[in-house]
Length: 231
Image 1 (cartoon, rainbow, N blue to C red):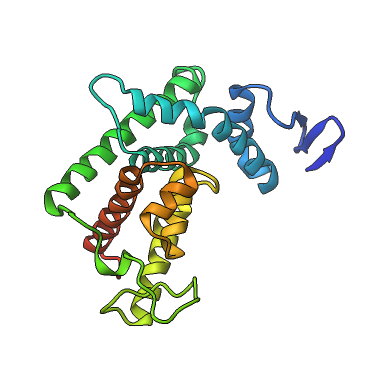
Image 2: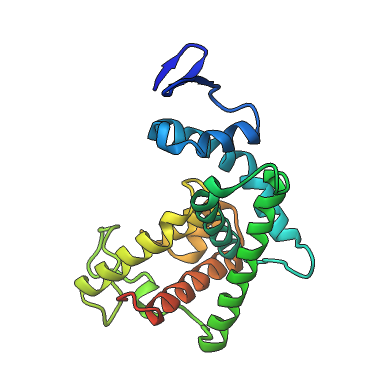
């Protein structure tokens, strides 16, 4: 596998296939991914990113608008459904057949709708089990000492306990969102110890929206705890 000025070139046992970079269409991208065994990881990442970037906004918008009685109103839930969709697409892409299945776009949105329904069911079950009026103490900024912006320790928590929870929040929730998105910006500032009014002012959001994102993060952590993650 080598990259030329014209694009990617894959040399097989009896054929040489030139791959444009980025792909020119869904079919080219899918067929490239289906040859994952003969394509470098760099090409796979680039081609998959082409599909993700092409459909990212459209998937989230569709989930927000809704279809057939399925509508995802929470931004975190929409991001979760999209992440799970791309994971399944990546795992199943080699079995996709153009001859017997609808266009890739239709297939992608079918998978996405299914993941939206899964996320909604989990979210509704979580809300039935846990109703949060305010975030738990460890997520409310309260710093021991002064001047240490990274010291976010709530009353009743030891530093080690906060460290574990902070790490879980980063690894299980924060990493799901692209840098620069509103949800990630809010969570990063909460982890840095900023108060809700400050975050709302910095990001040009309402305080109610910031609190909603914070409460959703807490519910997600509680769900992780019930599923066996150490919180």
